[in-house]
Each structure stands twice: as C-alpha cells, then as structure tokens.
Amino acid sequence: MSDAANCNCACPSPAVVSTPGTAGESAFATLVTGTIADSGSTVMVFTNTGWIVPGMIVILSVIGGDSYTYQVSGVDYTTNQVTLDYQDYSTDGPIPASLPVGTKAVVGGLIGPSQGNPLAIANGGTGASSLVQAQLILGATPCAIAYGGTGAATKSTAQLALGLGQDAVISTVTGLAQAITASATQIAGSDVTVPAAGSYLVTGSVSIDYTGVTFASSRVITITVRNVTQGVDIITVTRNTGILTTLGLPTQDIKFAETLYSGGVANDHIQVRISVSVINSAGTFAVLASTCCITPLRRS
Image (tube, rainbow, N blue to C red; front, side, top):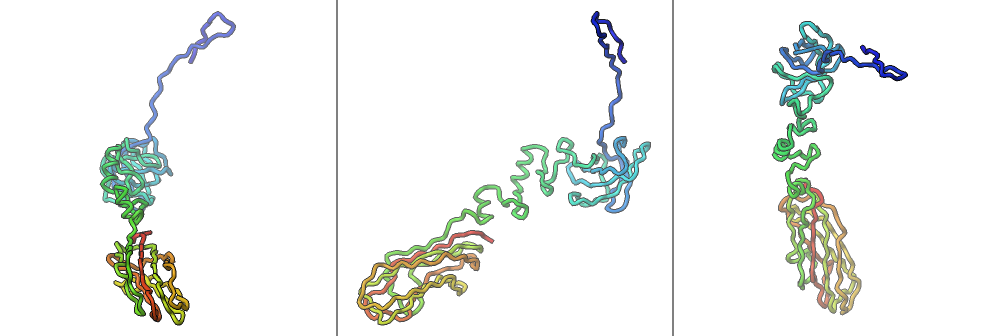
C-alpha cells in the first residue's frame, strides 16, 4: 500500500511501501525414487512437483548420460509422486532398469551443460561441458563420413578419406623410335599403377613419326589403353593412315578422349598399346612418345 505525502505542490506524491513476497518454485527437480518403463505408465517421486501439471512433457536427464521423454498423466502434490507415460522419442537413450537418484527433470527439453548433461555427439552435440573437453573428444573421435564428417582429424587425411585432392598418376615416355607392328604391342615404358579402387579420369596421347612411309592402301592405326592386370580395354582409338607413297609427314599427335574409369583396384597396371592393320611397305612408321594419366575423382 502507499500513503499520500504532501510535497507542497498541486498533486500529492505516493509513498511506496515494499511488502516481502514468496519465491516461486523452480521448474526443475531431481529424482528421489522410481523405475523407468518403456511402455505404459510408471510412477516416480521427485524433490518437488509444484511446477508439474498433467499433460506436460517432462525430460528426465541422467547426469553425463542419456535422456528420456515422458508425458505427465497424474501428480500427487502431497507426496511428490508423478505418474508418467513414456513417449519413446528418437533422441531418447536405451531403456535401463532404473534411473539413479539425482536424475534431472525439466520441462520439455534437455538440461544445458551447466546442469552436467552435455548433448551427446550422436545427437549433434559435443558430449562435453567445456571447450577444452570438446576439443579432446572431437579430436580423438572425428565425425564419420556417414554422419557428414570426414573421418579424419587433419586436412591431408580428410582429403585421403574423401578421395579429394589426390595426385594424378602419370606415365610419360619420350625419345622413342618404336616401330608400329600389326600386333598390339605395349608402348615401351607406358605403364601406370592404380593406387586404390575408385573413379579415375583417364587421359593421354601418342606421337607417331612418318618418314618416307608407303602404304599402298589406307591402313587402320589402333591405340588401346588397357588394364592388363584384368585384361580389359578402357579406351580404344582408331585413325586411318591414308594412301602414302614414300612420304614424310609432320609428327601426328593422337589424343585419347577423356574417359571415366571405375573398374580398377589397387595395384592394377594400365598400359598404352598400339598396332596397324597392315604394316608399311617402306619408310619409318614409329612411336616417338606416349603419355597416360589417371586422375582420381573419388575413391571407394
């Protein structure tokens, strides 16, 4: 209440009198006794129940452990007994036989780290109540690829795990004078080794020399990129020579079309081979150089 005090002005000023009130009850309690049930109803006793009403969703959180979701179906405010129906939420932990004394109870949500129940890694948290602890936990247990992580603690190991940023494997040979025959023959030194199963972009080229060459009819040059370990051709390229009579031509560079290859496994050997349907009757028809490159796109 207040008393009007005359301040010698037209309007009286009220005098405020403070009346002590009572503190409200915290919307938080701990478990005294009670077993947990994964179906139907269960009765538990809490330290206080003034904040609990029927129909309310209550989360029971074990310190440093899992949480369980219940709906209140009845409250005895005299004995602090609460009848609860288990809701079986996807975030709830495995059902134990009983809950320990001191289990936290709050309205419709988890208790934050200050109450000793950090959100678990499996539920999107860190499982820690401090930055240092979180760093230790996450550093020792990198998030798996299946959960959106890299499964690695460093950039280089993450790239390796995801199959990204890895070096291409290249075989380049030059200074050759290898005669092209009617049988498919490996271009000397042209060999790359598959480092691991996965998807690779295969590219390359072959350089051919024509010096005083004679072909009475147009012949077919066939170049293959072959997984010799598995006996499988990855790329096949053909070119016609045309009819040539003792003719010299500029070096012919034949490039392979970029090809995606996913059939290789670790330690498979990939080679470049070349042949001509009928060999030249005169002159020099030979391979001068060759390149084969496999670039990892994704590792299995």
